[in-house]
Length: 566
Image (cartoon, rainbow, N blue to C red):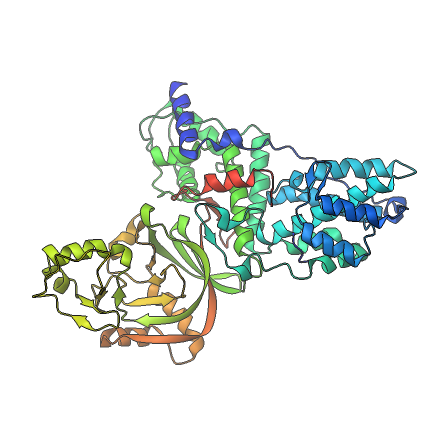
């Protein structure tokens, strides 16, 4: 049913709160008791007899608020009840139970059942089940609230609770992939109620992608860690290295045991950083996106000391991100996880290629959006973005020889070269500069030898780079926003194979050596997801966290924890 719907410890704790904006103080206290359906024959077959009064429902809908609960899906509700002659809908107790169980189970998707009138509806349902004569006005209120809850919950499962474009650091998800998913919601709701399969229909709306199911599993696990008491922070100090002796080694061992990273074992001395613990730290470092050298320095300590409460919120935030982009995703696509500095080429749920990438600097962050790969350019020229013109105009004035060294030229808007020598550039500024800067193709070109194009308004694409050594860095935020890709020739080959023109590495290399700029349209257009997941799972079901390099988690966590308002 696709419907709308110690002192050092204190210091460390303080630093974490400062870095995360104090989100842990604002996080909701989690406690949840599942709703259990009464499957006895009498309950399943029970039908409430209600004296219908269409005027009551019309008036309640016009008011838009019932018992201080705002109706969120008001437009759909009007269509839904108009189609039914403004008669009550939820007269079968089993349908009510199923709806309440489905709303209760939103908790396991990282959403708050209370955003869907849950406690009020649960209490009213219990009251009705114990009452012989039901007040028609009270039941009408309940009926509308439950319909509103189901529609709104389904909307959130399909596309998320938080509108990604409402955030300061926007996720640009287009209309087709976000708000345009709700056609025929009123009729779909009526059909689900008639068929009596509410729980099944709820589950059908949830993404089936391994990322989503893996995050749900991790959410359950981290809630269990919290229920067991979580973990205590490790004291700050000098970097712990193999065979070091310190009281902090005991804290480290305890921390890894708390999340089942470390298998229990008996060490010769629990204050010695022995080989067994050293190897498990390397395993943990991989999980947290840290270079696995086994040394417990500031970066490793910071990640291990993040409280379990924040990890839970982080997982919930990434479940929300998954709902934004995983709906109706094709089997074949490219995904770039900015936070992981990695590109993945996925086909039929198999990772056929993974590559290191370089993403935008902090002040030129890579935009998050969804596009479609359409063509490839071999031996590309580089049209310099206007945002970089200031620096190049300054070079025209003070160092014009720079352009010949970098194989660059000044061109008109129609592409005609403009002579640099002999022209007075001193009166030009960004505001009156009528030309463009272009770098010719070649080994020094900023785009390297290949760029893969998925046209978008942000001028972002996947491309090669002459600065190959930067791929060896752990934190790879060096670009102006585009995605520099280490295995770009492999990506190009995979994209070109459906063209059936003998495309392979040899053919690509031959064109590169020829030096001619060559554009090839792709016969198969595939989705490209530029995403930002700070927690997730890989195709081998290995769960991971990644550093929040752009500090995007806090804002989303705050938005998720707000009471829902349309």
